[in-house]
Image (cartoon, rainbow, N blue to C red; front, top):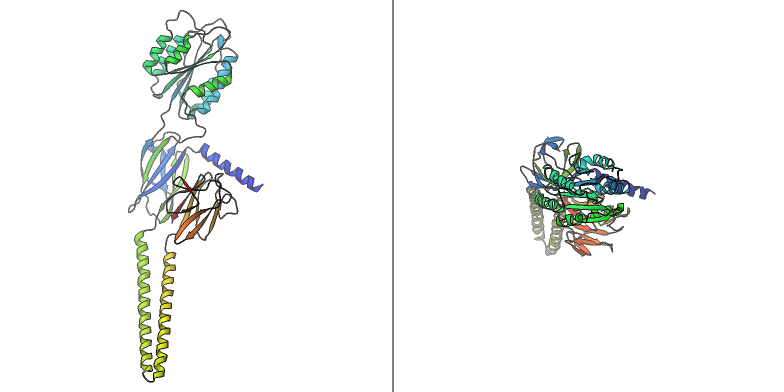
Length: 473
């Protein structure tokens, strides 16, 4: 029960992060030292200005530079809906339900306009609205669409399409990519000043394709509507059910469907932190009301490491010199004593060998102690894991380390692509290695699956969809 509760909590946390987070830090990079300069790759769901951003390091606001790397180019869709007596009842109901469901498939930065026509003119009651900010308003406008109950009224379809194209082409604050979707019963009023060919000509001039959804009725529809759609690089469809409308719109209209929120805007931020420490440094980015914590890693200064090693070497050298002097004096005294008798001379030879062995043993012990000191002053190895459950750091304090999804492992990765007991981290001949333990998705390095892989610093190795990197903090 506790395990199931843990999984439910984990899924809820992931859902909350993905569907409520408007911005995300993809990665950070230390560009230079003395002074330090840190680059941040930031992605977002919508466009922001520099004034919307603040960076805090050591709880203090820090100056930064920024630039926009790329952005999604929103599309504009105008739905022109016939509200005459021929679409009254089931036809208008089917279309309203279909377009309500279709709203969830658009990119959050796309723009939608809902227009209607009943007799011979278009009634664009509102301008375009961005789905991210105006979805509720758009849903209300769709629900408010009503068709006349007068079955004798006929509409001037081509005049309405002409007016919609004119209006749509003048909307300068929308997008270069615009689309007109016409929903009609296809019963055209005779005597119109416009026809399919004039609408086709205008469509090509303003570069707006036309998509026609014809809801069949007992009255014959205008066959020219097929010609209108085909000649303007659009499509047409005869329908009489809601699911037919939805399937046609999804298949025909160029919609970049998003099952999950996608971060379409990419920014590069650069700041110069002060009082930087070796290891992990934490900072925060505030974007409007959203606070995003992150970190950057600074490797221990190589000069400091060399000074430490040099100091150890000098200390070892001094100890060896002192030990040599002491042994030399002791040997001299023994030689003087051995000159008294041949028996003492033989004893002296034996003692010399003993002292030489002691000297070699002392030197070995000193070298071992120096190695321990060097290890103690070197970088601490840390594993950074990035998986579906988020990012975590694991400091290596003992070996071997079992890695997997089960709670019995030393390093637990809550990711369905990781096996219960996936791999083992070992230390062999001075290097760290990951060894596959007959897992389902194995160990992948540079796109190749392998049974054993050397874990190098700052190089990603994949266990399923989860990545592991080695850092020396």
